[in-house]
Image 1 (cartoon, rainbow, N blue to C red):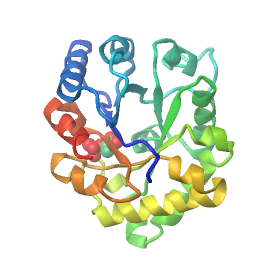
Image 2: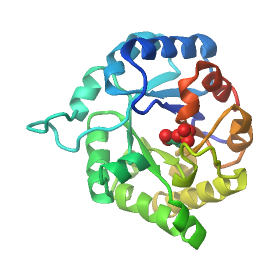
Image 3: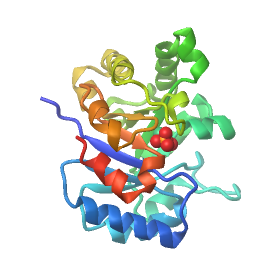
Length: 252
Ligand code: PEP
C-alpha cells in the first residue's frame, strides 16, 4: 500500500499583492476544507506570516517559501534566511526551481547547502529538478535529472532524506502549456524512485513523495496524478486561480 503523501503544491512565483494573496488563500481553503491531500502554498515571502493564520486551523495545509539563503545570517542584503522563514511559521521551502537555476545561477553545490540549512531549521525542502528541451531531444534526460538529484541530495542521511519532497519539472513544460504525457512523467518518476531505492532502500523510496510540475491544470491533473509514481503536482499558473487549484486538489 502507498504510504507516501499526495501533495498539491502551488507556486505563486512573483505574483499577487498582499491583499490579493490573502484573498486567494482564503478562497482555496474554503473551496477545499479538510482532505487527505496535503496542500502546500508556495507564496512570495510577504505572504508567509498572514498564511499562518489563514491556513493555521486546517491541518492539511502548509506554506512554502520559494527560496532561502544558504548562510545562517549576515550581510546579504535583500536575502532571507531559513531561521527568518521558520520564525513566521513556514513549513517548506521550494529549492532549485528552474527559474532560480536559470536566472540566479543556482547550481548543485549551492542547492546542497540550501537543502542543509532548510532541514537544519526544521522545514521540508521541495527540491525541483528537470531537463531542458535539448536534453529531452537528445534522450539524456534521465541521466541529467539523476545527476541533479544525486549532487544536491545524496549527501543527506536517510532520516534527513525522508523530509525531502521531490518535484520533477521538465523545463520545456513549465509555463508553456505543454505538458509531459502521463507516460513521460511516470517514466521519470519511476527512474527517480529507483535511484532513491538504490541509495536509501525500499522504505525510504516508498515514503518519498515525487511531484510532477509543468502546465498541470484541471483538465490533465487526474490522468497525471493517477500514475503509480506520481504523488501530486507543483502547479504554477493554475495555482493562481482558486477554482482551478481546488479542482486540481480534488483530482487525486
Ligand atoms: C512551476 O512554476 O513550477 C510550474 C510548473 O509552472 P506552470 O504550472 O505554470 O507550468
